[in-house]
Amino acid sequence: MDDSVYVGNAGQDAVLDRGWLLGHFKDTSDPRYSEDVEIKWGVHPPGDERPQWVTGEERTALLVLISGRFRVELPGHSVTLAKQGDYVVWGQGVDHSWYAEEESVVLTVRWPSVPGYRVSGESRAREDV
Image (tube, rainbow, N blue to C red; front, side, top):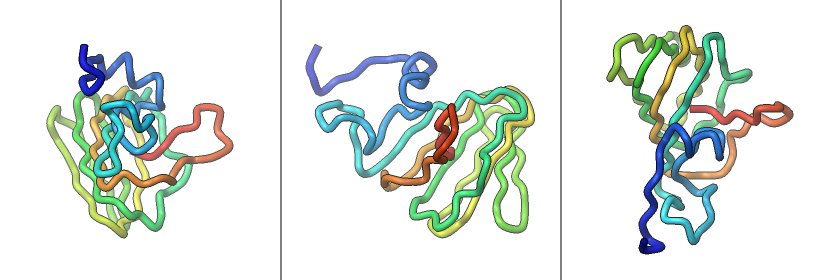
């Protein structure tokens, strides 16, 4: 197959890079490398949460619920995604955090793809959604 084509499975590939399927963190020779957009297949057990808020956000994000029940915390309110296809979008400068109320699968699209936001010092090395 051509080096500019990649065929994979989101569930299998997600475990290789903390859920991230596409973005600046892939090797530049990989067709999944992008500085324009990031895509994550996030699988979260019940009770999984981001240990600290993302602040100083430089990206816009779209989070779509595939399955489960997932809460996104935003300044001043919470958004609960409960039905498959529910989604939330937030823009640059909007701080956020999240919590999996049930076992959940979420698809996150962020743009642009910029380094940072990794929660350090954790055994699981999660990044925000």
